[in-house]
Length: 64
Image (cartoon, rainbow, N blue to C red; front, top):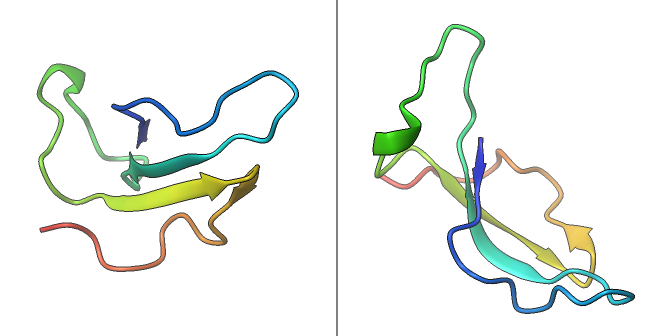
């Protein structure tokens, strides 16, 4: 699941996207999620810079 709860730095037609520090949770097929009360931890932050996304969206240490 991906959450971009803030404006991107650049989202203009004809220019590559730059969006820093959006949140990404890795959910397994058996996981459930309450979208009204999303978890405050268990996510990693990732970015897209000039149209290029971070290499592995699930690498790194999850928050909490």
